[in-house]
Length: 184
Image 1 (tube, rainbow, N blue to C red):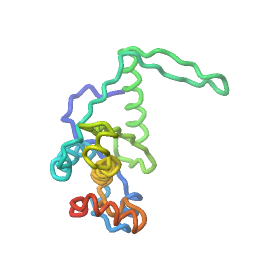
Image 2: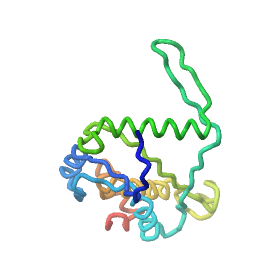
Image 3: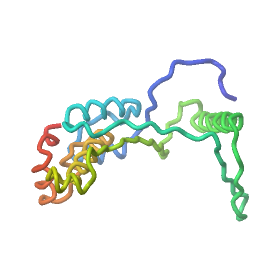
Image 4: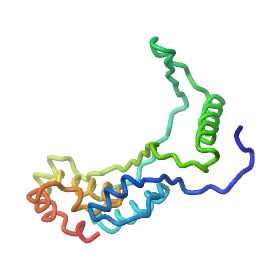
């Protein structure tokens, strides 16, 4: 059963030993096998201020709708889609947490093969249309997007931008239009 005691919220962490070993081989900084997902928005904000001189990246909030649907499969039959109200969502969440608690023996057993999906949304804003940017301002919008994507990806995966770009010719190209990124 779910505990009714209220406890202080801890940052959500997950053990990523395998991924960390691979990252260590790439020469990226070590975080001792634990990644604090709650720090990602702060890291992104700091990187946006430091590297995005045009201030084109904006944080984006994702709001879930009121109507949710649950899809169930009973053996080999067709999927059954059911609406899920607020009370059902709470009940299903509690069932999932109870199962996780039972499988990990209240956290005493590690879960070595789990997945956690985190959605991070950022909006890249343009002052001008693509045509105006290219013709009037002589700016390549693809280079601006590429820089934004490298900033976001480097922060989320805790790697240097140079490790994200494949091929020396592509790396040289990115370094020409975004040299500041390679001093992260």
